[in-house]
Image (tube, rainbow, N blue to C red):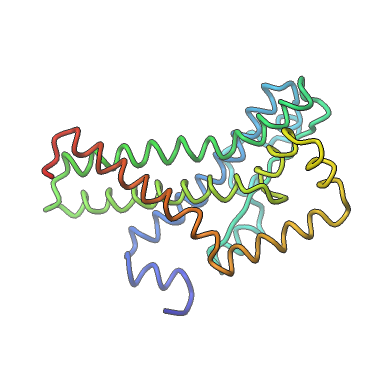
Length: 223
């Protein structure tokens, strides 16, 4: 299937699927960046607050370019500026602030997939609203699993690189190389285009769906 991603989603999942994609992509990225900001503030860095970044406004976190690329290609990103020199702990502060974003996505995935289990157990699927809710929660859970896995890759500029740099001084020195960011972008493109990234997140998505089914079973859904 080829064509504009919006058209593809409308053909396969309808308006609810499209709404769910847009809601979860924008909402999850915004909360991901806010988690970085909250962690930075907790570490003593007031940069996010001074720059008025502690807001739910997606234009602040994603910017017009990210939103435009999302509308065209279905790909988006965000940014939360912080100043590691202000962290209470230079080493652990860097790790905690970087890990806060993926941790938020893991929490969101857990909430969505647990709620999905409840819907599978108690929902009346003769009603369209129940199926719509199932689709909404499924997309939210799966997208946040993928976003967490992506950001934990130790490839700059992803969060995983900052986490690993905080744990490994040799890797931190490697990231200081002028071409480190360019190499990181190259590796990231290769992972995404080659399909290798799918090898990483697909098993975890299956684990997430298995969790939803387990919750449904524990709540009394028919096996």
